[in-house]
Image 1 (cartoon, helix red, strand yellow):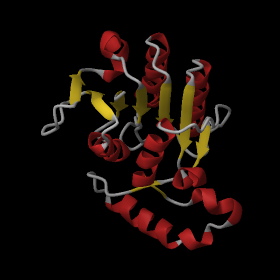
Image 2 (cartoon, one colour):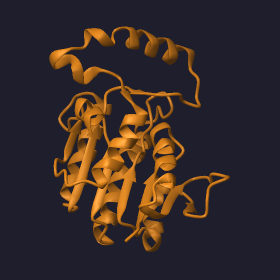
Image 3 (cartoon, one colour):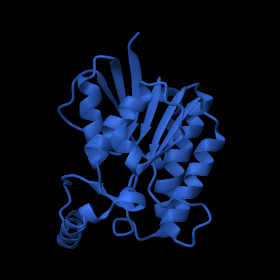
Image 4 (cartoon, one colour):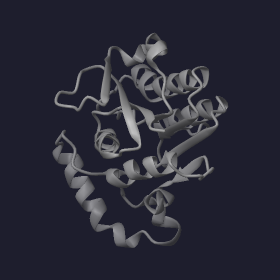
Length: 216
């Protein structure tokens, strides 16, 4: 029986790669996208629901599927306002998990971050940690939380400072061995493929660390 998948964050780096994979994957009959703007040129198996995803509950009746992939995430540079930042990085994934539970969606996969900790003094890490706790509290049958390190890949947005920083980080990769291995760059391609593999496997592990992502 072919499946229906929901993607949140399909315009981002990892989400766009995931979308391409699911379009090509014959196990999926329908892919639902919930976003602020329409993506042009997609095949008919992709159904787009355009609106304010900060008000995701307004899509409740259409939020039905076999799997939900949440690739939502922003940065301090993109969203310096901490209130808005939390509405995005905490509010959207948690509302999506709530709707998944209410609508009986059995699989929920979300991208978090390395260092997520609800008790952290660092706002970013604390927000991710609080999101993880809230998602887990929904007790969705199959829940996977991915914790990548720095996500690598070709982004549409080109920031010189970030590009230089990433180049330096790549040079240092061979030094990250043993316990430091988890700090290696996690390719967006690997994250997207791991999400698909997790959804279609019997793996029960909830938290998937950065080094486990590349193995999966």
